View 1 (cartoon, one colour):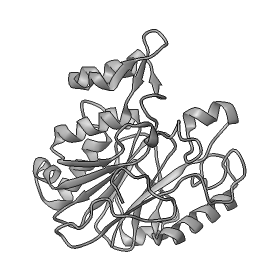
View 2 (view 1 turned 135 degrees about the horizontal axis):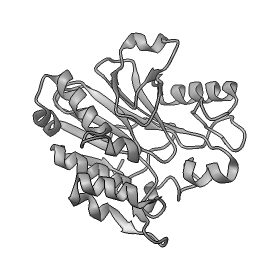
View 3 (view 1 turned 45 degrees about the vertical axis):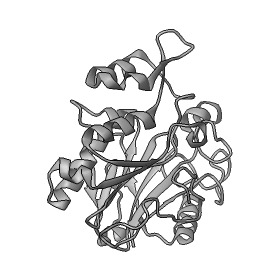
Length: 276
């Protein structure tokens, strides 16, 4: 599979190929097809917080997990920068973990995040069996004082690997999944200003919108720039083209910005990563 190919909803794939540590890294991402939910959650809604029927969501999650042969551990996401470790016994937790990124070094469990416009990010260590998944909307990307969800995830993996932050980043491989694209994501001047004040070099990720003093934001582009500054050498997947845009590709993806104001709500996709 090409690194720029969109993943099939029921097929796990290995975006990084063979890594030196000898353990496989498997990634799977759902689309909106193949489930039992009724409109506006049709049909493979994975979100249990969007007013869909609980029975439908449970069926969708079980069906998808079986199809991709993964055991996802679900999180309650809050657009923050907290990162948690996933262990094998987390599969039996009665309540979801509250965080926006998770990492694991355990086989048999998958770090799972839900999205419907935000950017899903997979991180894998090339030398050690460590993987992580992060949920990166603009708030999570921005964070505070230059530390967003990607920086927090890098810190967690560096601590787990016993390396310095820079050494760990140099050993990471990253894959970016579908998110709202730069042709669809309009933001106000306060968002553009916050990013550019933090890093002036990020200004090209904001192009003038048709509405005065507004901008079209490139979320995947912002992520790539932050990862590059941290020292990550390989970033695959979402290249900010329309094929990766959740808002534009309505036949494949849920989009909160596209659907919620018209339909009242919408579903969520899931991205999961695990160690073989």
